[in-house]
Image: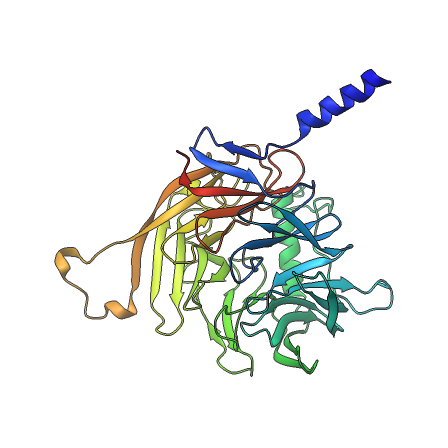
Length: 417
């Protein structure tokens, strides 16, 4: 029995992911921030950091925990099976939801929204959502925003058998796209809505039979919402903004060629620019595109096929970007794309200092110069890394299954000495 116990202990130790190492292929230090298998940081455009930049909140199998980004000390904040939504930028409250248990009678997506105090762990119910899902909280933490559908249409999974025009079974990626198109073509009535956290009032901002999704508030303007028309990206003009009073509906990017796609949009930290993945056309030419909200100025940074990433993000000072790479089966079909990247942008200047008279109305081109941060060869991209910069810009946080179960990691932007 002692030998068996010892063998089991040795096996557990062998399977335990490393906590601190220097990536031999990049020279950058990587640390594991979480301890429980199955832990995960938030989606790439949700805030998981406290306003002072000292702590990161992340999901665990039994709740939500906070990790001190200097000491790496972990403190449980919320216990139980919950959905971690985001951290308030002003109050540092941790917002999360609990779906109604009686799924047979409750509307789709209904449930209570809670806020937990990070310091005390005490939670309170702040509102209830009778239909739909909450996607964001505004800059002054007075409004939640989300989207709701009149009815639910389950999307195709890998187990959903589908065939193409030739009668042959479709691969998963194509089957998934067919499912997205079916959902789009269903033209289900939807609402983009807000919920007032002080009064509980639910207000419809936009009604549509387009598929509304990816709802996010500006990090600085409490009244501006960014959202998308979901569906096959080559079929929809995806990226839109609107004011919370229903005015100012604006299309941010209009497709100009067949099979052009744009998406995975996000705000810059100062709220001035919307950035997004742009491909002209899909799977062939790759850009990180920016739209300045106040002026309409457009900047497109070009990148190589292997550097295309599932999601991009931007540093707190706006001077650099990150990308979380992708595998060969994704849209770029990258041969060597499984890396976490740091990008330095460079704009292309006017030749001989001579500018076109209408240059303010034209796209400002540039390129992204890449540096590899982490070798993600062992990562399975069914789990998106969703990389984010820490508030001080010195680390990049991501989630990965490179050592088996999902864990939360951070890589230092500066190379190890």
